[in-house]
Image (cartoon, rainbow, N blue to C red; front, side, top):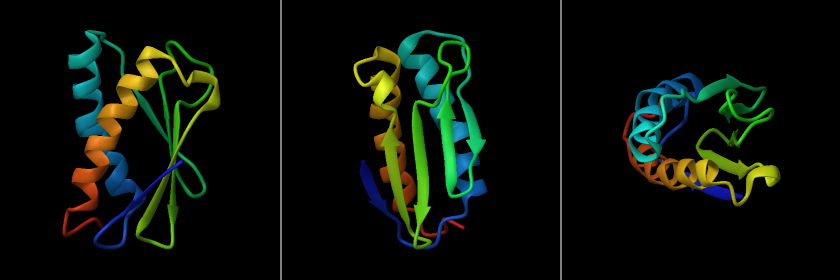
Length: 104
């Protein structure tokens, strides 16, 4: 699990919109695939899925204490090329997101 600390409180809908606007584009550019990732609201955050290829989530992002994101990767897709690509992009995006002044 990766833990990301943000500079301020996180709104999950803002995070979801940020990922929808950035992660899909970068994933398509890197993998040369025309498939959209799906972002599903959960009780404590978001799940990232690629429903065209996988039955379950690839990543879960949980909001903890308002300004901490816990990112967990599905144990079913540890060495999968799509999951590895998403993980690399997601790590970069979450670092960008965590340094934004207005996360809410």
